[in-house]
Length: 335
Image 1 (cartoon, helix red, strand yellow):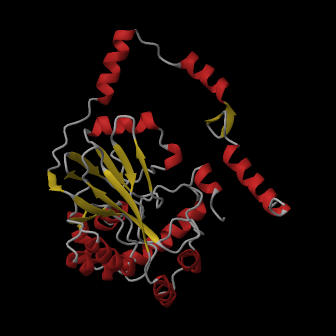
Image 2: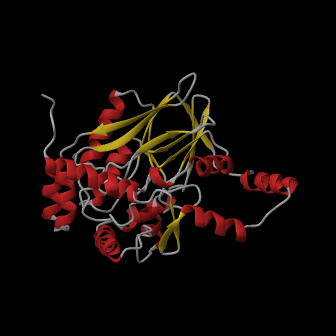
Image 3: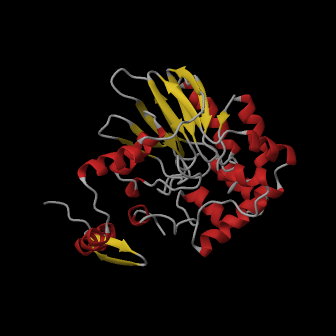
């Protein structure tokens, strides 16, 4: 007799599929969804039509890129890259040990040292000990310049409410010296791994707080980003969700994830990336990292951080910063 799942599981699966496919054949027009065919017709009517030669010239001008004086570091055979420490010094300690075991020749952080977690000052000595090479995230940029907010890029009031709590806590618990040091970090790095030149940024090459989600970063857009940036690969973070896409051009785009909180998948581990040189392609491994999440949760409670933050650490499900998620990423969330 074949196995049949309970009816309630069938219904849950049906609802999950419906959420994932609800936007198909639809386009966002202002604040509403419209049929994709209607959107394309309207765009064609309003769009600028160029002669073939003018079109080719415009495409070349758009993808030509800008001169970037950022020096190229390396070359390396293998590096570890991570984002979003979020004051999680316990995960940072585990990462440094794990990266060393895996033979990383250098360790890179893509910013956001503080936020979400407790006691941000514990992060800096570990970074010095592990010789971590970092860039600025939106948190470092804001803290070093005395901004009133984290410039996280949220638009939802609830998301911004918790972002403000997190930013205020981090701002109060970082020394002036730590903030000044954050301001000395570069906003991007270029790193050679084997024969490939990689650009390391926080959000995107265009904006420090741009969210590059897997479901909303189409291949043509990513190819243009790499053309404009004149690189063989792009490494970013900011979204908190790890992913890797190899483009038709053979280049790679990697969201390296964050080690400050779980990836909204019901697991308590966090994620980082190992990047290595290979003959035919760039080697990319997204690495799950276990750490003392119970110890972190206890420390967060002792610092009176929101219980919503603690619940995320204990369950692996986000309870805040959910409204920024696109439909596909939100559909697999618990909340």
